[in-house]
Image (cartoon, rainbow, N blue to C red; front, side, top):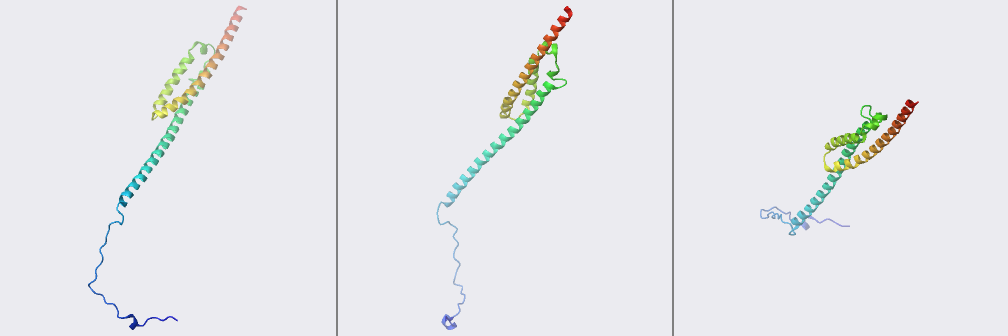
Length: 171
């Protein structure tokens, strides 16, 4: 069995003396240049973060542009629907000889041009304006097709009513 040493075996108890001193604290790094490497690494990380922020900002701008363009497109569509079906402005309400004798195509193109210009002026940047112009062009072609059809139908109706009137007066 193991035994513990006795006091005589351990010797005298140590006594503090004033001769000892505290070693100096050295704050230098053991490897030279580690600070420079850390600065370079920090610069790379900061640069990558800047690139990421730029990508996020570009995505946010694209989303904002899309939303504002869609809003402008919706306003333009509503306006063209009013020009087609509205009680006061709608070309669908112009019938017979009035539809044939008036320059409806030119008048309604000019009205749409004014409306599109007002909406376009409210957009924030050129990207939004280009996207709006593209969408408005589609609406304009569809509107023109419906207007041509209406004028064609009313021309036939007018010709028919004129022919019937002429026949009735000849009898």
